[in-house]
Image (cartoon, rainbow, N blue to C red; front, side):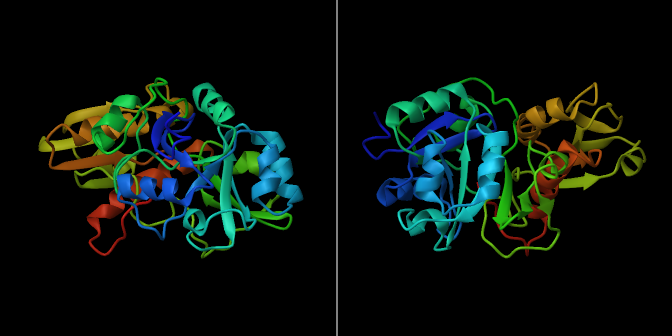
Amino acid sequence: MRLREGNVVAMPTETVYGLAAKALDSKACARIFDAKERPLSDPLIIHLPDMQWLDRLAKPSALAGRLAKAFWPGPLTVVVERRECVPDLITAGQETVAIRMSAHPLFAEVLSILGEPVAAPSANRFGRISPTSAIHVVEELNGRIPLILDGGPCLHGIESTIVLITGEKLQILRHGPITREQLSQYAEIEEKESDILSPGRLKSHYAPQTPMEVHPTSTLKSWSQNKPKVGLLAWQNRLEGFQVVEILSASGDPVEAASRLYGAMRRLDSAGLDLLVAESPPLGGLGAAISDRLSKAAARRDPASSSETG
């Protein structure tokens, strides 16, 4: 098995395609950073083959255990205090580690055969749109990695929700498929900002190469005149005045919109346009996660912004 030999392998999770390597092998994990051109200051998420590994990698946390029981396997990442066996390369030198357990059957089967956890950030080059199909991985990393496992399109299409656990409270570090409303049933959610390093927290992230802006629907309706070489990423309805239009969900379904988000962004990015304009999504639920991805994708227009984390 390529993973057992210390190589990196791209394979699907239920969120996006990940670039996996043995989590407890620093040399193998270094190959992730090399293939993605990812800075070493950007920590990785560890994916578990089974629940027993949580206590082997992290110090005891009753809240982490309850959240894991409620949402794993699934798209929730918990950030907790690490044990000494977790390499510094994984955590960027911090005393916390990000952990989750994927629900994708192919990913789960590979980890079951391997018998140990893997680190697996998104299988894209640093600063680019996350891949939600095997062909996206080919476009991003062809020639950089030895193997891509094709498991079809990803179910959710956006990265996992990340929460920082402190005692019996949590902070949402990254919005994702598990919503604030769902999490609030299990713990008090603190609103204060955390300075902890975590995937997806830099200002610019998930960004297309074409400049991008995000505007509310009311503003977009004023773009009635024809605008050459401008594309629209619409939430539900087609608007006139754009050369290319991608609609996330004709029915307004946020689950469908999230699953289509990165694919639609990639198609617009490859259409030879001068500017991409995205319609602001409705607030609440998955809308918060989609809004987060759009605002970070648009941040690349700011020359002072940082690059993304995968």
